[in-house]
Length: 539
Ligand code: 3NM
Ligand code: MG
Image (cartoon, rainbow, N blue to C red; front, top):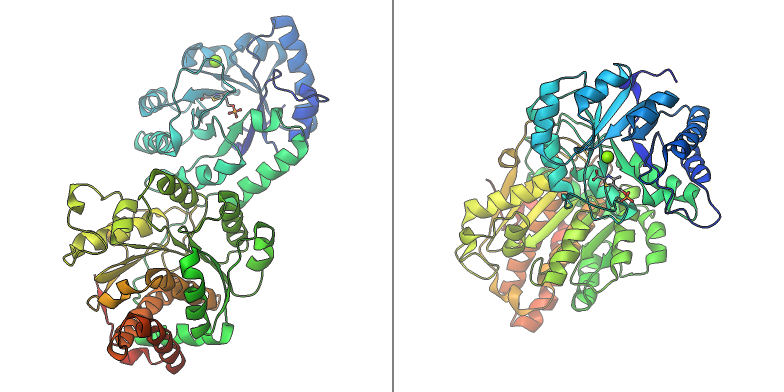
């Protein structure tokens, strides 16, 4: 095959294994099913096959690859690769040294190397651009495919370290594929999270064995993978920081948009919040729907101005939550995420982390303890800083909010005595899969709402959760050109002002409940943010 090495498409790289074929399939039928549906590169990997049979098999696979104009790589066996004139080889750390492989194969063949740590990148960088063309970065997750694993799973953080090393050692020529335990339930997060810290490179592709080779329907499996990879494709966006801060005028405009767009706010939330959250949503001219039915999430997400509130105090099954995230992300409708009790138990930590890596959120809202945990600032510095304590370290909370905004490319909200809101979306431009050039967390716009605490808020149920309903209404009601930061800041300001107003009008916690809804209704319909008591300070 004649092809230019730099044109090789690494996006979906199939590695074969003839020991896991389901009944009724052959190595060839599985490879062809893959090629027909979007596999862009094939590697024959046979660990227990005699040379003669290996060559026969390789020649047959080569014919299929040629039909689809896709390069064929041979694992480990340089002799086999040379004998059949394959397009390249892939070798591991314990196999033939790369300079020898290159000498045998010549300059035009593709050479791939298995890499698990930054020091190996340093080595390949020293060799320069004529040696290694791509690396298999792994093992990412546990896998049963590799019979004698020598490495333990590195996770996305390990892959990021390898990508950072490629940047550090300036190995710009070297392409990358992730490998090991990759399946549809983790591929999106792998693609979107495995990005060098400077935002300048991501994985060039996904490499896998069992998800296609062991699939009873390899066509369907490949279509699914292809669609997922194309949808999550990383783009390097040289984001410019948007320095415009919300004002009474911009918030007024948000409220007008919400009024005329009347968003549908799907709540997946805890039982205690359901009724109050529905009433808060109605007070804001929006329609609540409290649905946890997995089969209808796609339809709901497609309703004009749909918005999803995911509050993980809920008991909805994880599959439903993932389906909902997927459905809203797919049509680019906003999700407000409220990781209730983020790290209170192992179960919640695991659930919330799983969801956080699964999709893109317009807003992540938490109390100070949740946000500090999310920002991983929950060490000694955190002592004395929790949702209830009066004296919070403003600088620390602002920093944590910025880190969460940056890390998840979202609008992060940290509630407490003072509220902090940071914009990690670069004016709504930046997607999870986008790079952020030289911008760091500290550089993100951040505001503080100084209104003092409203103690009676803590005496009713679901007051924090209903701020989530308010944010979800506002982000759902925005026009397509509307500004997310304005919407979230507007929602928090409105909620705080309403809380203050209600606390002066009520006679106790029972009437506070009622007064809060009245105040939200009144302030929303009056739409005079210039008069609100809660005020904004740039941080
Ligand atoms: N190499 P599956 S992991 C062939 O870490 C291979 O270098 C790995 O199989 C490495 O997609 C692996 O079925 C097996 O998990 C990947
Ligand atoms: Mg090997």
